[in-house]
Length: 223
Ligand code: SF4
Ligand code: SF4
Image 1: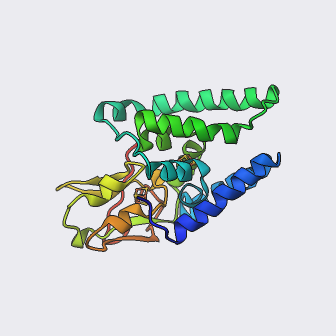
Image 2 (image 1 turned 30 degrees about the vertical axis):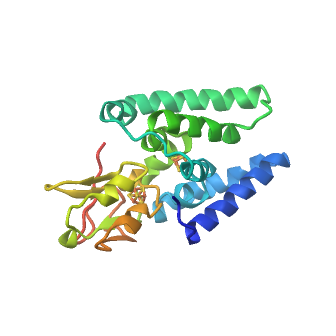
């Protein structure tokens, strides 16, 4: 069950705005939110994903009724594979072009909401977030991010509760390492809420989101 916290209130308001823009035929204005999301990735990470995205907010609302399918290891190999992600990205570009050329009654970014929700329920949240058209573009810049979530590994007990709640499966917790893949991190803060040691922080990364370890903490770049 999602908590009624500040982030979720902001997300609810943005979802409402998204629906109003769509119903009033002004969905293209949402493009400005996407552009804002893109511009801030190198500074603060994927804030759009954590606070504005109507797909992820809808999934979380529906998750209060029925949880999406968890990520299966065999599917992870497919959906986290860069070649597969490129194929899905190209298919999304084709869909975008078709909706524009054919003056499709439902704009592409509105169409992405049911597609994202169905994909999530079929294959898991992480599978969708890794292959979402917008998320893929943001992940390219995510490696440059100056800020992101970090684990203070000196105090980490390795319980793995953070990894269990991460919707993007970007936490790796084992005896050898405790890492966050910042370019795929949605800045949702769920790992921070779940950590019983209060050991995860949104903080400045030493040099680039996925590339350099922040002092006294761990982060990683898997690709
Ligand atoms: S990856 Fe896509 S669906 Fe996921 S939060 Fe970001 S924009 Fe939304
Ligand atoms: S749970 Fe933590 S690591 Fe996972 S996406 Fe959310 S903020 Fe990022």
